[in-house]
Length: 262
Length: 254
Image 1 (cartoon, each protein chain N blue to C red):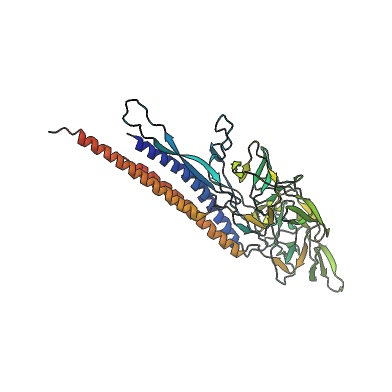
Image 2 (cartoon, each protein chain N blue to C red):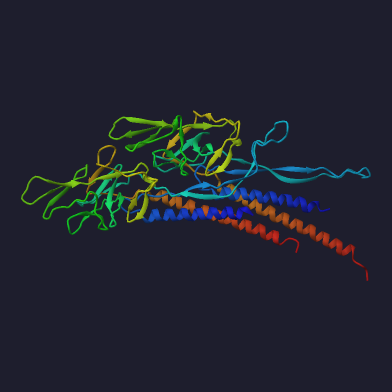
């Protein structure tokens, strides 16, 4: 019976759906997290009787055919790249991007990764780094004894040096954008890497050419909405149960066939 | 003599097929833009046996076989996702998708942008506008899809919207003739023309969920298993009848 395997694909798909939802809920307080959603498609059909085939030599055709589907497949878990809410933190080196763009981070192996998580810190050399200690690009080094770190919407970082009353420009934090940001690959630690699907990274300056602006002292919250996740979870759980029900129905039918003519 | 067995078998085979259809519906209960299938059965009359010496004409034996599955094109519920690249179609329309095998049609409005900036489905096939694929530029932001399918964006620092194309929404005089191809796509056979649809409305930020009704499917499932079991026990009774008859009639008195 095909139904057994069809329902198995349904159960597998819903299991993955619950996995995606649970990851969203687990990350609902993760800075810069973008929620994922499992996307499903139906599998190929067995055309037992093809619609539109000739029913007679008089040219009459079948108005409907017999198509038996083979179940469901997961086609992807695309990320929803919408803006998350900003929450003020008051920390000088917390930056939220309002609009398009990612921060560019240099990884220890020299490659670049991208993130929306702007909770930066200073390391021992005064560089602006992520929580893992990887420097933000272009690398900015804040001089010792400087005070009043200010980051303007364009990403320019200025400080007040001792004995000076005018701010000194340290550098400008850049942004990077992708034509298909849903095609970025997550590598954990709130970081993404570019892929052939995302397109080549386009570096630029905040608040110009469609890039978003930077908000100092704010962090971008996850764009997970609890109500949506919970209702999706209920739907996934029920769908799983229903597929299991079909499997037990098949089992029951096979059992009654087995019990015949004893 | 064995007609009962064969008639019962014909019903059990159609029930199995009907269960396959139900299983596929239930498996796709969370598939965006999925349209449920229904089974249709018809009576198949076998011509009676002829012989001139028969006292009465033989009775015709009626079998059952499945005639068709048809698509239920009722709209599925819309779910708000707030994703600018999610669209649901309010009405009978379909989106047109360019696949290597030709144009295909879908109700699945869960769209993406690929690395060339084209608007594509989850499978990566371009969604067609009135003048070919819809292509976005690197600096586009705030994608807006109007209810008539017109797609506008804010390009770079512009304050005025730039048009990126208009979604081609089509409908069919007889959508039952569409063939499901999997991957949420429908194919139109020869001579089935897609008509431009101006009455359907496109809703941005929504997706159309599967139109599978879980209560219907579950009650259908119960009906199928019960009927199947009932036929099985009926065939068992028939079998017992035969056995008893043979035992009694062929019983050699001691």
